[in-house]
Length: 239
Ligand code: URA
Image (cartoon, rainbow, N blue to C red; front, side, top):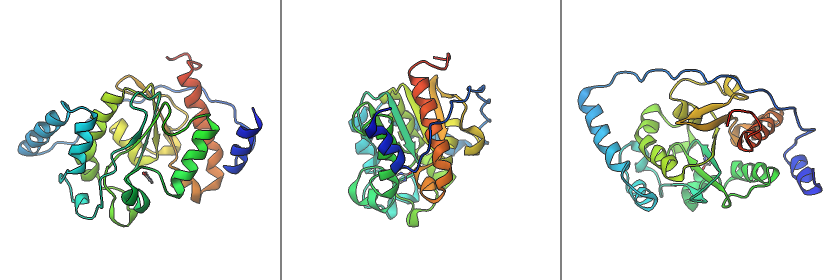
């Protein structure tokens, strides 16, 4: 490991690197709960329109979206940022106050930690990396997005992933993991396993904002990122 990487790891509060775990089998996805027929049809129609958009159209559509209440308090939608042909896609929860102001994901304190994590992996946010969120508009008071808000925003993220076609996805925290796995998730139970989203390797880890409050889990998060790196490099025999 070179000096710069060691310094970054120290800054992240990380000790020695941990040994990578062997991936476990992906658990089956839960079935979606039933919804009224009219709501399903409306959602399908909207989803079908979104599913035909290119990345620019998608960003423009998200900017004007009024599909849930989060549009009311936002300054702007925060669509996502990065390399349009990424190896890595990081999916967070939703924009906070800084992101709402700047229009870019992860630019506050949690973003600084994410940047440090990227740097420790030898990555930068705009080179081979794309960063997006589960919801594109800021939940008031930085609360966790509601299930309906995540469901309303899902067609955007789904199309974003389809268009970006990343080699690997990292779900940062529970809302992202639950959205991508379409089931209830406990991050502590799902990290260390190789999941898949539509065939794309998916790794679940802690959200950087959680890590800022729970310093002892930073080492686990680093372990997860090393697992992601070795998966991407074909080192887990499952590529
Ligand atoms: N937290 C997130 O989940 N996303 C952001 O963009 C910023 C903070």
